[in-house]
Length: 317
Image (cartoon, rainbow, N blue to C red; front, side):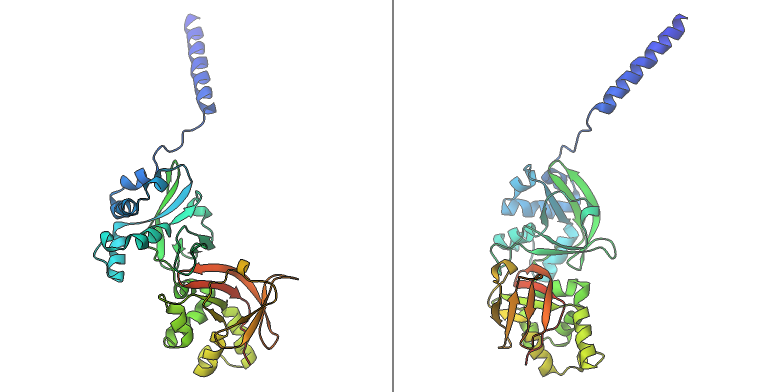
């Protein structure tokens, strides 16, 4: 009888102790983002970059960040591609913006990185206020700006989360954003087949150019080809194509939609006007022939300009 009482008492104590433990909150990760990076031998170049630009506080603070962390191999490939001898050879401010281009505001699990655009902390020459856009594609894994793949997700820290990527994400140009998005294959084809056109030169200019591009989708181009009763954009003459594309570029200003006013006339690079409106049914731009294009997505920021996606190809006279 004593044995049975002893066993019962022991079982009660064990159960009570377990139940109390179940009620206690699970402790979160204690390491900071910087400490996680420092502990990974594949991220030593990233740690060097953080130190060079003096960003340790950002990686140690309590502000939630998501960091896309390039491996040492990724940095070495970047050095070769851009002609740097190493991390110390990159000008400090350039390196700072490159690092910031891998940082997102908030703690995002891999499954929360949804297809579309997010904003990084990086800035380019085109805008001192609007940070750069990052395009996320999930058609085959998770890919950023068309080439950098997530290879090791969800390294949790007390102040955010780190995802390891296999390529350094360069500050995106207009051309890079066009090539990354699956709805811009025709525009990307034009950039490749007409590299010396005024349109391609403006899109690729990273020195003096600051432009606003109203970029038609593949669906928009398909409707134009049907209207013209042709099968391919290559059937459009170079002169006509140049005039059409130049009519989608506003040179000299990085126009966020918040900077555009209702009924504002824009003199496009072709020399003809288009009218932006923002009342009575959303944001639209109307060409000289009265054709109305809807702005589907706006403020896709690149280092040398900004893109607004339109659902119709505008036609000049």
